[in-house]
Image: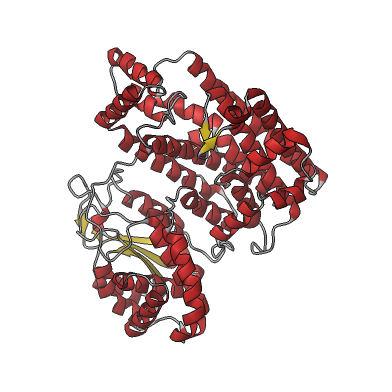
Length: 575
């Protein structure tokens, strides 16, 4: 299977209208994820006293206790109560077959002023117009076997429950409707997971779509569903301390090694070694078992390749800043930086060849890395050819450069972990499709971050960008010369930079690019049904949300500290 032959073409999602948020629901993703994590820990600590179904008074008592322990704003008590109910039902819902579940979506998720769908006695009859996410959720849920209703009304849901055909419910709604529906769920005593809407004005509403996808696909066949991905990522980050690298690579040998090792330890998100660890764990019978040294060494090799590519990229683009510090060529000069990048490539291949896996597996790891190395260089070559002779460029050409330049790194990371885990050729083919879409989405996100950066920053100007491609696509031939003049001047001239940003705003480029970002994230997820391995499929679906999560600096760490202290001091309070 390849991206070119997927049944559904890439759909650019439209920007939703801005609506007032629900005041009693956290509006940042970081806050919501923190509360979900805090609830999961609380339920684990109080498992003996939290046996579903919980009556409303019991649920409120626990919610108030958790809010107090974590010093959370009491305004969020009802939201925490929903999270608690979800958590106590999660394991039971996971055991219910998809074809015995109901997905209940609210009609207010549609774009009301443009929606062509009629209604019948069972709710909205979606016309697959592509204006909202109802289409995608309904299609995927029905593919899995769910019954799907786009409607509201407790009587209709109760009738389905009483028919004996529904054994679990996944529902999306505002908090007020969830509160009214809770007694019916309690009376039925069937597993139910509720995902609250982020707005409550009953029109053009939005929801945390990654959360919905994860719950819809929840199954006990996925052994990684309880895996703490944040803890795994923290473990991976620890592999890049001086002590850990010295133990793995041996002591530093001379100035070249010192420069290369320091760059390997420099800041970075470590997504690629994290993906290697994820792919391996998902293919194991016990994904909670410690990672073997072979996987650790292979994951560090993947980061060596990535950091080497950044050194060479900075040389080719003439960049002087990365990670908030001077780049290697800016700090040490091009000859030293070039040598350090080459050394990191050598270290990566040395680690793969000597990771300790079987000889045939080691050979496969080297083959995967060499293929990715070649593809990345071809993509970088296409970018350099354009940079040498700039011309108006189409968005499709930019996407192809992203596919060659950025996607191979994700393919190598996942492919190496999967090979160590014993993946089949069919699994590797799906991973390549997934990596294609993931890499393109990642590069689009980088372009958008450059646009959102301080107006004085020159990041993102010089190399071809999706924003430039979209601007060229949306202007007439006679106007493209001005587009190119502003783009070429933007790297050095703040006035051209400001003028180009203004042009993007006038053309609505940012909204289009964000729609494409969501489209390629969706395309990554759409590549997964061909996987026959439930744990790998489930984990890769969650990885999309994890990689593209907007991290809220400070908020989570502040409350993590309070949570740790509060749990020690107050854990017996809810017993």
